[in-house]
Length: 331
Image (tube, rainbow, N blue to C red; front, side, top):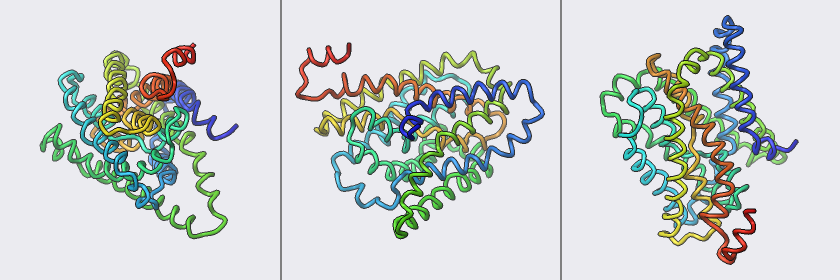
């Protein structure tokens, strides 16, 4: 099996992991303590291996095409937050669910969006180039977004020492470790394959993470089935609006088709596993934020299956392809 095959069918890995986790949590509740102990180091490894796939040492090259970069930054860090703010009145009233939705929708994806860009016929080098810029900007802007949307009271009372420690230990340290690893690989002949080997690990590590969350939060997950319908509408609606927004932005900036496809996958995918440690570090009253984030990642992955048809066939078809040819290719 190739790594591309693993990434293509990763949604099946996560669905299986959740099902197995719920089963283990029900049948073996005594293992919860062990799983809780394992969760944080596995999360750290997940983020480290994921960050090593972001070309952090090539930031200079990433800003060479300013037209695409402007469209991606404006779309992800101005337009999408504005759209999320506009939907605040339609979100469930539970503060934990609202926080989970905000956390996951405000940060663009930096890993599997590259895979889906490739599968959807986008120019992958632009996706790879934008990833490190996206990662650094979202880390810088997320606290500001939370303050802007939820107010100073939230920042003071909820974003406590545990959340700050999770940010430092599970985001900043893995990010620094990934940067050091990339630098070392770049300067050490014969070590390039190390990054390729590490690229196999994010999918199984994320599978382990959702397995542990399902096993340790089984009562919470089963009790929250009633709100999943509302969350489904929110997250599906987001995918539709993100795709249409990418089409409008690409037209405004005059992007070619291949770059427009990159923009669509960038706006449509979110960095759920990066904000997951922050949600897990919240007070117990905010446990539902974790459910919202994990559920969004599953809806998104299923939505990407639709995107692989919608983006290249409807939003950004090849300009030399006639409507009759496009219609025939869809059959």
